[in-house]
Image (cartoon, rainbow, N blue to C red; front, top):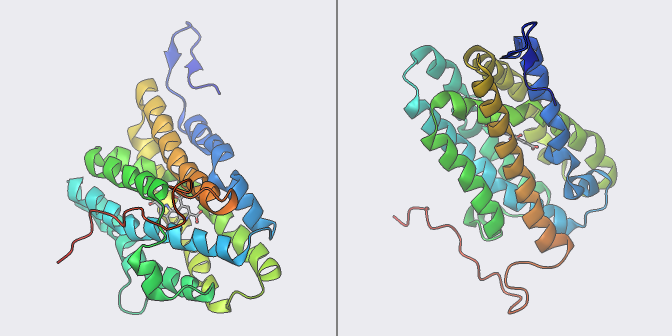
Length: 262
Ligand SMILES: O=C(O)c1cc(C(=O)O)c2c(n1)C(=O)C(=O)c1cc(C(=O)O)[nH]c1-2
């Protein structure tokens, strides 16, 4: 991929806004939509247990999204940005007239046969998934808010994934209750609005070659988070090699040390 524009005198210059936007978009080729687990999902090749495993593990991502957005808000001194970004918390946590994404994901859990308490207990969250999601949350909490915003830009490609599930699941998995599709429908419009804001920040702040390269590296980090989550699920649910499988069939792995016990 060409990262810099070569000026007539031969020195490298930052990409134009449009070329930088295209460089960000070209990262879509590494999106988790292309992971074999997600491809099997779209082809109707997952068993009920494998699909349940995905829903239960992805719930951890859903839980952490508002916490990482709250961390970004805490690090952002610009009220105008905070006023727009805070909508993301409301989208997931809900507010009057909107149940919120976490509640919609719990409905998805019930639609695939997982009771609320099973998702909330986090008992199915694999260590690899937990570590990947935590890496994202910790990055957002420790990075400058502009970089944290850039790390959300995988959402550029998320509507494709949501639409793909709406298009393929009803035919392949007719046993899923219709209530389960609320989350994906809701995110179609929310994600488009989010990326407009995220992109605006990236294009405004990444005005040097170094900053543009850094942004592309941050986006790759986030793609790695999403891909690694599915790698962990592949091991556990497709290859039948969950953690400690050589020792025990029991899910002995920890349930998250960061949860309050109070
Ligand atoms: O189902 C998906 O494929 C998918 C992917 C992503 C993503 O690309 O990070 C998000 C979501 N869904 C999603 O629903 C969501 O709310 C969301 C927020 C964010 C973020 O990084 O702030 N990513 C995503």
